[in-house]
Length: 164
Image 1 (cartoon, rainbow, N blue to C red):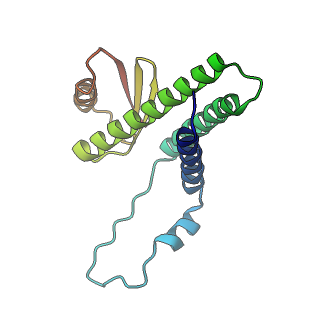
Image 2 (image 1 turned 45 degrees about the vertical axis):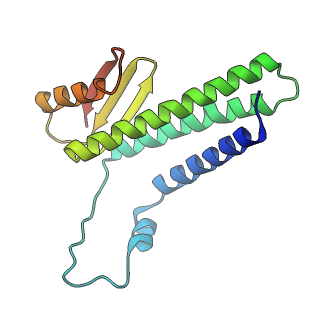
Image 3 (image 1 turned 90 degrees about the vertical axis):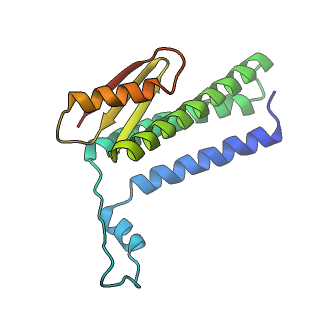
């Protein structure tokens, strides 16, 4: 059964997801005015990072799908006509979605730390798809990433690495 603490967690997680989608869909002009500091030293090195349009589109689509699923499950949890079993199933599915999101974040952080590459990770059951922003399609790099990600799991996963 769901309690107030879990409901608050789901509500705050949904709010964070909405704000992150808003941040990703902001125009470059607005974003650059937010990030500009007026006290930048002349000697300081400024690094400008541009994300690949394909990665941004994948991230937005993935987050929209996640928000739609979470909203549907939250509606079931808050419904007066849903049975106890339906509510428990919806709660378990929400926990599964949260676990998948944390696994995605861990994989993205691992790839960024190890190879300094921007990527998008999609998890669907045992299938993990990693899309990397790189102009070169390096089979050795892809193989190393697959091995690194597989080492995170005890069971075998079907891992695909795509370059965009």
